Structure formats: C-alpha cells, structure tokens
Figure 1 (cartoon, one colour):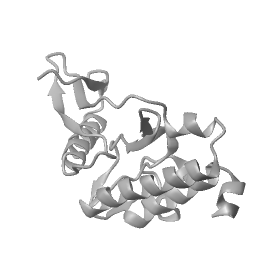
Figure 2: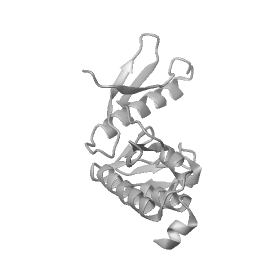
Figure 3: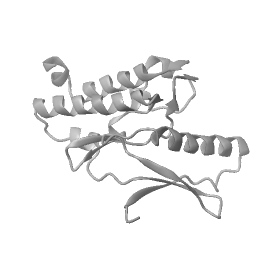
Figure 4: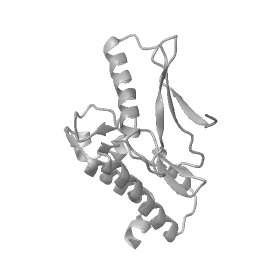
Length: 179
C-alpha cells in the first residue's frame, strides 16, 4: 500500500519452552488487539502480526520518526515546552484509556516525538484491555511501575497516570516545582 512500517522481530523460533512461547505469542496478539482499537495521532498504530515460515513472527506497526522522549529530556527544554509535552502526553493517554486499554509500560523510551514535537505512545507489548491483575513478577519497567505493579494488584488507567507522573519527575524537579 506504499506505507512504511516498523517491523519488530519477536524471535519466537529460538524459544523452546512451550509455555514461554505461548505467553510471548499471546502478548503479541494482545498488542495487536489493544493498539488496533485506538485511532489517535498520538498513539502508534499496530497493523498486524505476520507469521514467518521458520516460526518467527513480525509485528508490523506504524513507523514514527523522531527522537524518543528520553532523548528529548537530555536536551535543554524550556518550561513551556515541558508543559506542552506533558499536556499532549496526557491527551494521548486519555485516548488509550477511552478505548479501555491500559498501557502498563509507559516510559520515555516508549514515547516518540513525531517530527521532534508531537508525542506518540508506542509499544503496547504488555498492554491489557480493561484492568488486569498483575503479579509482582509480571513484566514491567521498575522505575515507572505503579505500586500495584511492583507488588501484586489490579493495574488500570491509574497505573499509567502514575507512570506519567514519574516521567514528569524525570523531566526535572524544577519542572515539577514550577507546575
């Protein structure tokens, strides 16, 4: 169709444990199901899962070009830019939650600034539809995980909002104080 996409190789053929293979496959299918429910310019689209003859699978998703939010945070951003980014990020997150999705891994590396300006949330690899019980051993990025994700508990939209607060804190204590 002439659309450039990003392909994520899931490397399933190297997994010999059938339980792990089933879990990875289920997670990929959940990523497709969750992300495909959202139509918003601030949310990276997922087009589908392609099975390779050798047992691997490729996840086809929107190619979003630009620096990650982590890379942008390494540069000197003015207060107005920080506030604007956080407001746009909140708007993107609201669209995700309106679709009944919990991202569960919101972090600066999973936000790409399209054309260096507009945040786009990507990587729905551990997302869930609705709220989900999360064991303390479930996949997560520890620095951004809400308390219910680090122990055991129900992860929902509030878990993502917690992660967004940590991202704002990462932007710098002065930024938080100025809010």
